Image 1 (cartoon, rainbow, N blue to C red):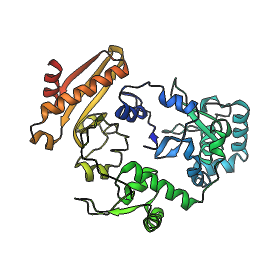
Image 2 (image 1 turned 90 degrees about the vertical axis):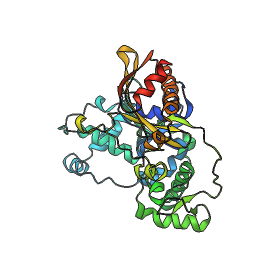
Image 3 (image 1 turned 60 degrees about the vertical axis):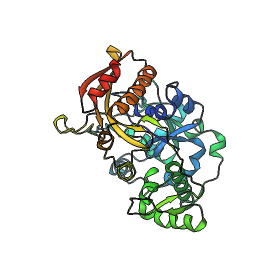
Image 4 (image 1 turned 120 degrees about the horizontal axis):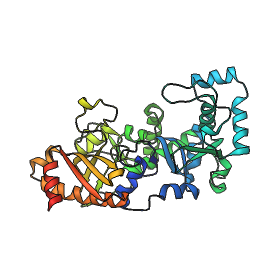
Amino acid sequence: MGLIQIDSVNVLVRSQELPLFARLGPHPRTLIHDASAAGELFEYWVHEASHVPTAHHHLYRWSMQRRLRWDALQRLATDRPGFIDEVYQHVVENGPIAAGDLKQRDGKKGSWWDWDDGKIALESLFHEGRISARRRSSDFARLYDVTERVIPANALAVPDMPEDEARKELLVLAARYHGVAALADLCDYHRMKVPNCRPLVAELVEEGRLIPVDVEGWRIPGYSLPEFSIPRKMSARALLSPFDPVVWQRDRTERIFGFRYRIEIYVPRPKRQFGYYVLPFLLGDELVGRVDLKADRARSTLMVQAAWIEPAAEASSRAQEVASEMLAELQLMAVWLGLEQIEVVGAGDLAPALTSAQRA
């Protein structure tokens, strides 16, 4: 995967935990925290806020060297010259700290991000790579510290790479993670812009590090690594986070699976089609259903608020199979989350089959 996108939504579990569950099944829920504490992962703006390997730190330094164009940052530089360096020195002397620990936290707060001057300074330093961050396990807050105390020395000792060379390495990594991808897919993985990367992909093809491929049903060219292979059979079974790399590029999800997916957290309840926190269900090499889940921790219950089957699976009379396989995955999830029961509320066209499988 190469990176794990971070998201604060916790209606089921912190979203960054779900990609690990999809691939590993039940596992110690401290894995990400432990890997970060051991210096194996660090947080940076990659595909949004993400956990990434510290071994890749040098691949993002070109981004760290780019100046942020925030109006708030320009205002801060004008109104309070030297303030960012003061915050940096505060972190040097007192880190690791959360944004709320700053005594300088006295600016006017914004209406959405709740960023005042101290937070803006920390985020600027974080972007520049002068400070780094890990997440506090108790409340998910970022803990900022000087980079030399967060990133292992051997990772920091790797020489910087020129921007274009670093971008090319990230594009090759994206091709490895995807298997097959269009140009936009390769760029989106590490949130790079297509115009910047188009000539670099052409260079990688010329160098033989990427090969162009034709994909049945695609009207655009695909790319893959030269050594890629197509497995004869896929035996995957997984509930996928809305922020899982398999489905986070919605256009690619439609191209590969014929599965239209939109997260509906910010959609008003009356306008939601499938539910608040809907996880696509992968079975074999198909997305065959989707399920709206919530962890009711007070009742120790994994709530299935809605379950849906995809038209292709329904047309092939696979509802009972899909329901049985989905229930098995839900049972694993309930155990992993320490929940004692599963409750199917009943909404959705797969809910009756899921209820039947649960009774059986």
